[in-house]
Image (cartoon, rainbow, N blue to C red; front, side):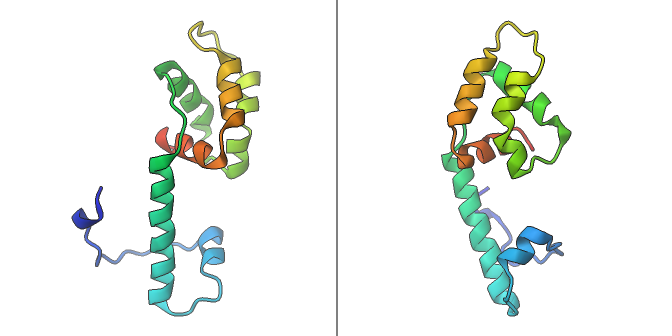
Amino acid sequence: MQADNVNVNRKTPLFFGPPLALLTEGETNTMEISGKVNRTAERYMEILNCHGLELSDTEREYLAQLCGIGYMSPEDMRDLPDDVRFSVCADPLLDKESLAARLEAATFADLVATVESLGF
């Protein structure tokens, strides 16, 4: 979705969990807080556009099953290569070692974008 198609004046309640609380720590001006959150979101969206692994349909489905626990913490994402290696899969089209090696060589930004593309 492009910025010119978004209602930029829309206000919505936003829960500030620990990551957003740390990001905006010490800020008291709501416009400055809003600006910081929006800049961070804009940069994050750019990371998602520029990173990620190319996956076959088989790899995509397999990773979606592994990520199916729901929330994927940063540590969960870093553990994906081992999860792939040690999980059971009977699909002959999946080369688990190759996928695990690509995940291991991926940057953290690539892991984040890949997990996000799977909906987690």
